[in-house]
Amino acid sequence: QVQLVESGGGLVQAGGSLRLSCAASGRTFSSYVMGWFRQAPGKERDFVAAIMWSGVNTYYADSVKGRFTISRDNAKNTVYLQMNSLKPEDAAVYSCAASRHWSHVAVEYDYWGQGTQVTVSS
Image (cartoon, rainbow, N blue to C red; front, side, top):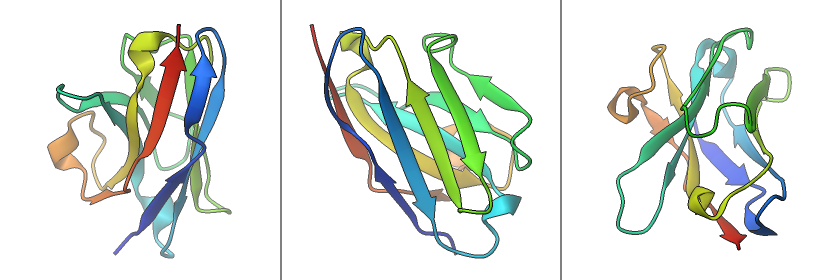
């Protein structure tokens, strides 16, 4: 069982930056692929980024590539999402998730956090 708690969301102007954190409970954190997803009102949940167990391999949605960076600190049981050059279309509830599989598909993630709101003003 893994419990996930996100933090770091808020209001930022377009072009600004935010860093999201996701703290995980459980001693097996390092064995999970960690992902970030986002959902805007009235839209489907979209994949944002994922990071392999070791932290070496990462994968990004095209819409955030070059602007967002996912990282993890297994010693702290925490995964991060550094978001730079934010755009109004990045506004959404961002959730972290844990999976046993290397995937960008939400249904393959077993554990989810409650989400944190990111608002980007134009």
